[in-house]
Length: 145
Image 1 (cartoon, one colour):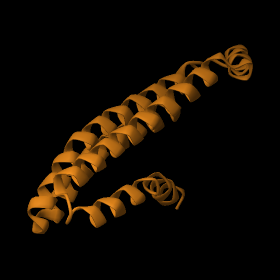
Image 2 (cartoon, rainbow, N blue to C red):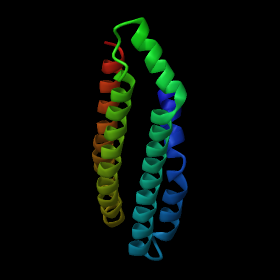
Image 3 (cartoon, one colour):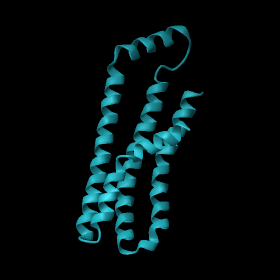
Image 4 (tube, rainbow, N blue to C red):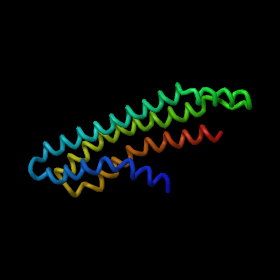
């Protein structure tokens, strides 16, 4: 349930860009497609910068340092497991963002020219999203060992 809510919250900012594209594609299809692609690439850049900011704050926060010290003193647990899980998820999400940016741009262009190719285009964009899921699975494996 939480995963579905997270996916829907992640897709909410994309909805206005798609609505504007659908309204403007009849007047100027190339301009509408270009604006949509630039908007989605900007959205991916903002998400990437937010992830980097959160990672820097987490890495240099005193609570993370003290928690790592407490874990190290109490048991033989790897203190960098959470960092490894965060890096695997973060890099997988950045890779998925890059893949979705290129495949999504191609999908939008294909749909603009041939609307019946929507299903196939959606599958290719979904395959690119799978990269992020693989990173999340690896993070769960790291944290549960």
